[in-house]
Picture 1 (cartoon, rainbow, N blue to C red):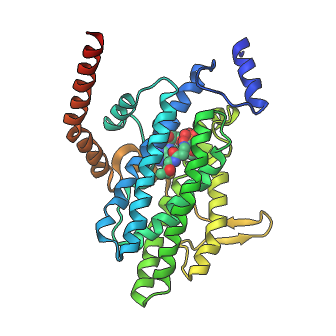
Picture 2: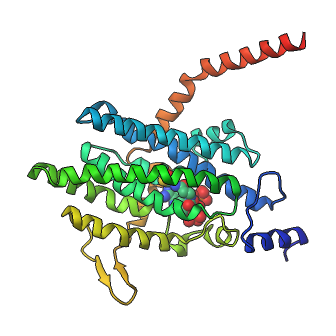
Picture 3: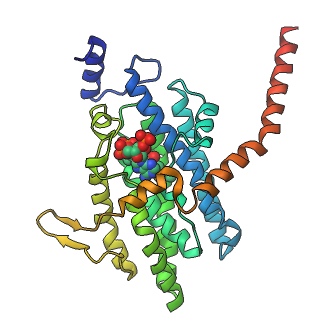
Length: 311
Ligand code: ACO
C-alpha cells in the first residue's frame, strides 16, 4: 500500500542512503524524527540541571573545571540537536513551548536527584555510558543532520563517561565511607539507567517503524543488553556490586541475565510523576521566562536594524 514516492523513499533507505533536509520524505518520517530529535535535544539541556547543581560543590579545582566543561558540552549537544530538528521545519521556540507545556518528553533519567558527589560519578559512568550505547548506533541513522550531530556528540560523551568512571574509581578506592557512597550511588542509578533505553520491545510503540526507516538501528532491549554486558565488568573492577540478585552470566547467549527495571515506575516518571519532574521542568520554564527581556531586546534591535536598512 505504499505510494510510488514512499516506495522510492524506502528503497533509498534500504540502500543505506542518507536523507537530507530539502528532500522529499513521508510525513510520518518527518514527525517521528521531530519527536525523537526534539526529545533528545530537551534531554541534553534538562540533563545539565542535576549535574550543574554540583559545580559549586566539586571537591577540588580540577574536578570543578572538568565538571564545568562537561555541563557546557551538554548545552552544545542540545544546540546541535535543536539545529538538526530545525532542518525538519520546526522552530526552536515551538519545540521549547512543547517541552514547557509538558507535551514533549525528555529522558526519564533526569527526573532523579543527585544527592552527593558520588552521584556525579555514577551519572557520568552509567548515564553517559547508556547515552553513548544508544548514540553510537544513531551515528548510522538515516537522517543526515542527525547522524552528523551524533558523530561529534559521541566523541564528547566518551570523555563524560570516563570522567564519571574516574570519580567512581577514586571513591571506590578511598575510605570505607567513600566506597559506601559509591555503592549507594550505583544502587540508586542502576535501574533508572536501564530505563533510559525505553520500554521493553513488546511495549515499544515506535520501534518497528523507526527501524524500518533506520531512524533507530537497534531495539531498546538489544541496547539494554549490550549496556549490561559492558557495565558488569566495570563494576567488578571497581569492587562494587550491581544491585540485582538475578544477575548471572548466561554462557549460551554470551551475555548476562538480569532483572528488568520496575516498568510501572518508568511509566510514572515519563507521565510527569517522578521524584524531580516538577523541579526540572520548573527550572526550564523559569529560565525561559527570565530570558524574556533578552529575547525582546534582540528582536527590537533586529527590527530597528531592518528599518534602517529599508530607509
Ligand atoms: N525517557 C522518556 N521517555 C521515553 C524513554 C525514556 N528513557 N524511553 C521511551 N520513552 C517514551 C518514548 O518517547 C515514547 O513516547 P512518545 O510517543 O510520547 O514520544 C514512549 O516512551 C514509547 O517508547 P518507544 O516506542 O520505545 O520510543 P522510541 O522508539 O522513541 O525509543 C528511545 C525511545 C530509545 C529513547 C529513542 O527515542 C532514542 O533513541 N532517542 C534518542 C536518544 C535520546 O533521546 N537520548 C536522551 C537521553 S541521554 C542524553 O543524551 C542526555
